Image 1 (cartoon, rainbow, N blue to C red):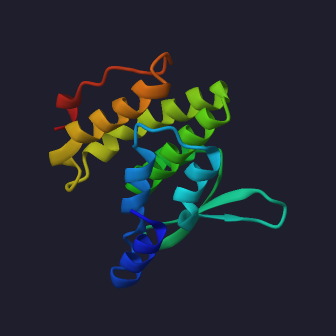
Image 2 (spheres, rainbow, N blue to C red):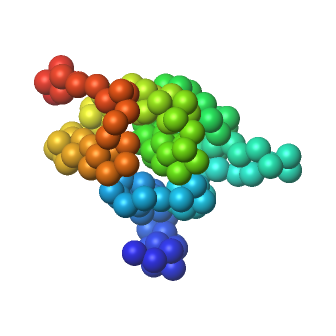
Image 3 (cartoon, rainbow, N blue to C red):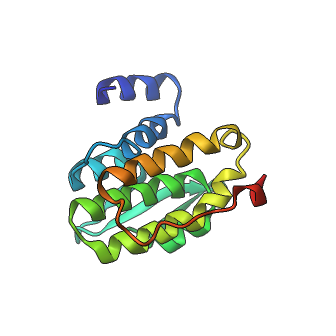
Amino acid sequence: MSETWVNRFEQAIPGTKWVHAVGTLLTPNRLSANAARGTVSPFFVTEPNNERRWIMLYDGAPSPTEWEDSAALALRGDFFGFIAILALVREAFACLDYDRLCQHLAALYTLLPSIARIDWVRPDVGLLIQCIESMMAKDIYWLPARVEIDWQEFS
């Protein structure tokens, strides 16, 4: 889906741009760092000093978070934090920064149980996990950050 279509859809139904971000970030194909950042461009700003800061809503109020702070994004416990962490994972891999990659993957797996509790995600948790594993299997399969989660605990 092109960005033009995404923007048209967003104009018709505000607040839906994140759907395209999830699909792009979970693709098993390689993404460049710029592509990963571009996918989440509605959710961050670049400040005059060139630092990026997340600007996602939380409980109706802006929640600015440092770009690399995946632990804080995981603590949000919401789907926007999940999208942001996915972008950080893809960006770190594209930059071949394995320390950052492990850090962000740990945050991703920390957040997954909260995501699994979301009513509209719950029926498709298996598909979500499969997409994450497929994304990792292509390029990140060797990382020790992969863990086994007992999903029955969260149902």
